[in-house]
Length: 77
Image (cartoon, rainbow, N blue to C red; front, side, top):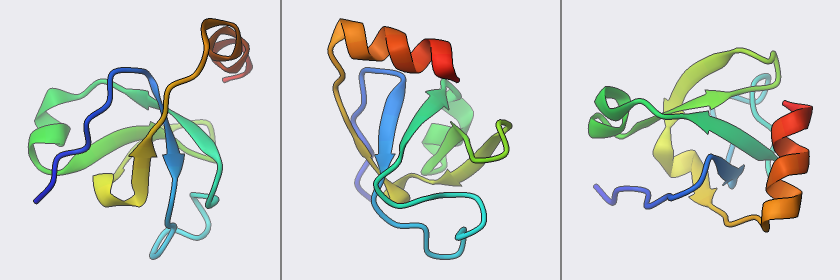
């Protein structure tokens, strides 16, 4: 299993298979650090409901945002 390499608090959804009500493809999501979940191939993501849930990491790709854009997204979530 390939581990998702991410340094920042944001990922982009590349698939919502099995989670169409919770995730939108091409949408940026904030992640909550959770080393136990990551060890199991899961990411804790704040989804469309505004709550954090575990999703398979294969549904996401890491992204880097500029400091300005990251601050804007951080305030919006």
